[in-house]
View 1 (cartoon, rainbow, N blue to C red):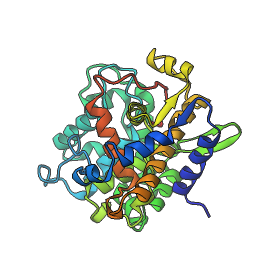
View 2 (view 1 turned 60 degrees about the vertical axis):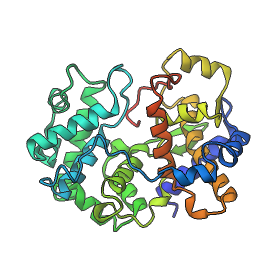
View 3 (view 1 turned 180 degrees about the horizontal axis):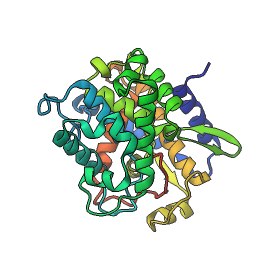
View 4 (view 1 turned 120 degrees about the vertical axis):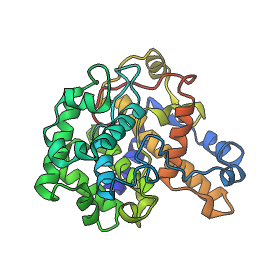
Length: 327
């Protein structure tokens, strides 16, 4: 049976074969890998495995919080890790960092399953210390309610129990997340065929892997099966690198900050081709690099491309805008 991560790779590749509004420039990928920023000698000096822990709980500073609480926190963050752009000042660091401070203040009580199961929108806003209603505030609260309810019903209230039941498999943990948390089922239909992306489910597993440094609750023997996480920021980075190309009308609409309908062909093409482009870059690396050990995992390349985009977000062109709960 095809696993969820194989389904992401297969269906995004199928979209790439027929996409009309977004294209992958393979010549640009070859140049990037053989002569540019991702050539072998450059990658040797880059720490592509670095996970950005700035906005998350830090074991060195939060020793009073146990691993179960850190795990609970990551599940809560990624339940609401989507669609910040409607508030021009809200970014991921405000959500992850705000919840982190609330966990510190409450000793983790705010992310207990009981608390998550009943939190309201205004209460969530208070946890994050955000001065006005959050975008999709009620929906964010509902997704936390869903998380708390599922943990209570099936995992003794503990997200760490779901992780343990995955038995050290990233693919199995993604499957469990999708089975028990409908809000993570990031899929759509493109020209009559299902396309699977599973961004928040995958990034949750990636955050566990990064936060626990691949040990304990973050030890996944198949973490390399995760794909990149189809979001807003990485497509901009790939556009700037010449790897992705939008047709003239889509490029105009994105630059004009026009909203693009969630699930529309152009939105699906942006996301699917971003996933597939990273896979093509990795294929090129495997072919070009003499030292195969330098070829990163998909999620490590995602982390690098995302950091590049974050570092340039004040000077880069706008990202596409879609109102969604998936990213």
